[in-house]
Length: 350
Image (cartoon, rainbow, N blue to C red; front, side):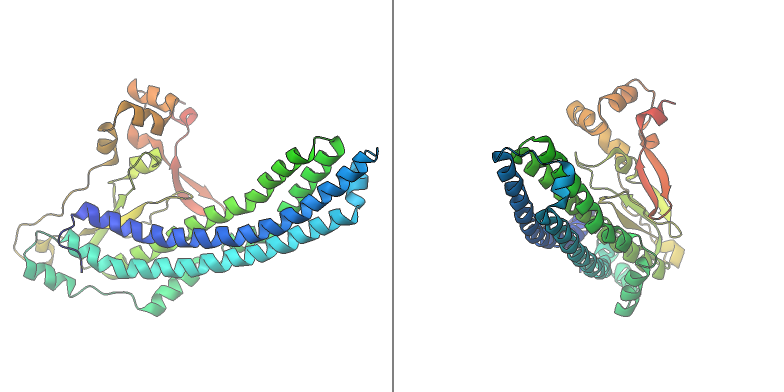
């Protein structure tokens, strides 16, 4: 049941926070897992750096070819591939488990969100409508998450972790040590390269968890189309929100549409209910309107507006050359599908 002391805005924030909390748990587990991988790989690479430093101290300046022939170098490359392939499997399992958690969470949270949206309607009418709300059975939620993973590029991307990171790490070590730039600089660059799989994993995890959450949300709405006639795009609306999401916030969509947010997006779909008269009840009631993202943005301070837009777009907006709705653009990737992203300034100004 919805907390009667919360406003609809607070209920939506609670709704968003639920999935982001699960997402944060997944992030922590992935970072801990990667930390173990990184520690082992760093130790191997440090040993290689020490071996080459000894050669240099003896007056030898090893060539790139000589470094590649060192047995220690081969062990570093083999360990990198092996460890990151294992890590890729951990990421895949973590994402799949978190997707299922997110979909189940959406299924659990929606009745409370709907109850909050119906606040202000006569209690008996609201209760009557909610008594007809159908929650997706657990096997349907599991099937939905499974369908999200068919032909997904996720596994393909993870399989490249080992080979890509090993190749990049090898190039860093060989070039750095052969050119004599020093162990400290080599180690710093090595950490940057080894950090790439972690940043990729975190980005994939958040994106795929949110994708499952949104898919379950929309499946619930479609299963309850006698109550829900559409949905409203709802963004986090804070200084970290991109201008595409600001532009989309408050826009209304039909049940045949999907919320295709960008990578790392935090947006959710809030239900738009039918009116009581649509179902034969003669009472006056309207769903509380959602403030548009444009209206919210114009209320912010100049410094916040400039920071969120960037100087170029801010200047163009203040000059009247662009409008907020133009800042959202649809793009389609052959593998990852459709998403809404922020329009580049060069496209806005032609």
